[in-house]
Image 1 (cartoon, rainbow, N blue to C red):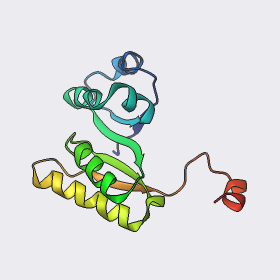
Image 2 (tube, rainbow, N blue to C red):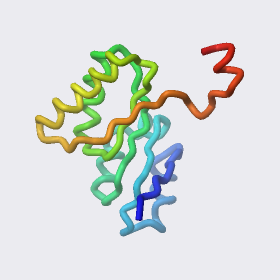
Image 3 (cartoon, helix red, strand yellow):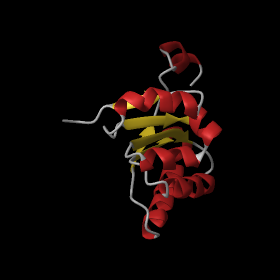
Image 4 (cartoon, one colour):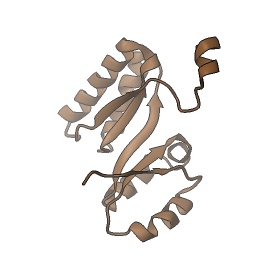
Length: 132
């Protein structure tokens, strides 16, 4: 059976942990996005990992290559299962991201699956035709 990834788009750690009570002992796979990650920080991920959760860190990294490389290196050290980057950052940025991942792995971190987002779910046909 494949894991189902539960989107945890909560405003606070309190709300998230209340939601997770029925999943105790089941080690769910959770998507942690920007809103809660930026509020609660890496410690939230560490706590969830300590509880046995698997984590998809949905931050859609997109910046200059060197910044993404350094950021993803730090995120890789959280030992999450999946991290995403935004493909609009260019091939050079995506290559730099993988360099950062590989550096963290060389230092003992677990290698995550790195995926690239190409379009946000909020993008509609009008935006594709007229804005992008």
